[in-house]
Amino acid sequence: RGGRAGDAGPSTLERPVDRLERRLRVLLAVVALMAVPLLAGGVGQAVYGHFTLVRHTGLARLHPVTATLLTPARSSDDRAGAQSGFHALVRWSDRNDGHTGVVPVRAWLQRGAHATVWLDARGDVAAPPPDRDFPATAGVAMGCATVFAGVTVAFGVRWALDRSFDRRRLAQWARAWERVEPDWVTRYGL
Image (cartoon, rainbow, N blue to C red; front, top):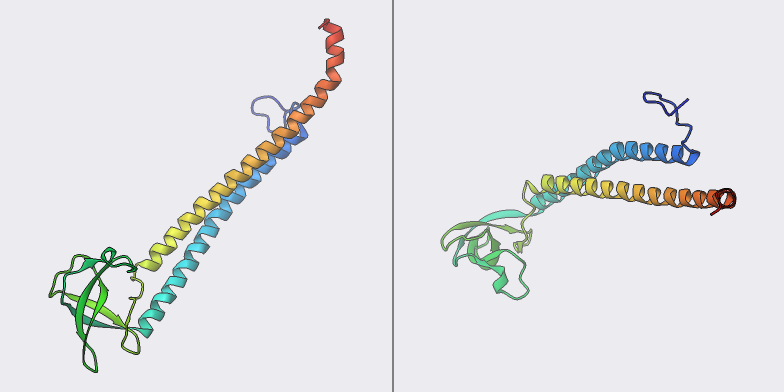
């Protein structure tokens, strides 16, 4: 049995540790090929669901008003402690009266352009809800990150298994040489 091309049986030279290593590698590959995509899909769906809920909650508690820019949009890097992005002085009207304030706006808008300002229930300027594409983008990004992490873990486990089996084989070879060396030296006069 074994050893010949096309023979499905184990080789007579294959040790039990070699068979165990081969089986563990196959098991690791099967688990990685099945579990990583399922896990990535689950993570992506969970992140998508979370940010969709955040978006819908934001849309439910905020209301948009159209504002007119009184100054051109400027980078927020100009202001100490400002959030990144662009801002401008704008004027808007709501149920009560007209208001002005510095709010976040899209980049490069000029004076007189219109922008959407999001207000909370008290009429205070609030951060806009996430863009409608954000949940899908976040879900795909986290799914890809999960695939990368899963592949990294699978390779790490394989590397650790390889090192462990190599150490075991080297120890077995050292013990075998200790048994054979005295006969080898006396037989061949070394």
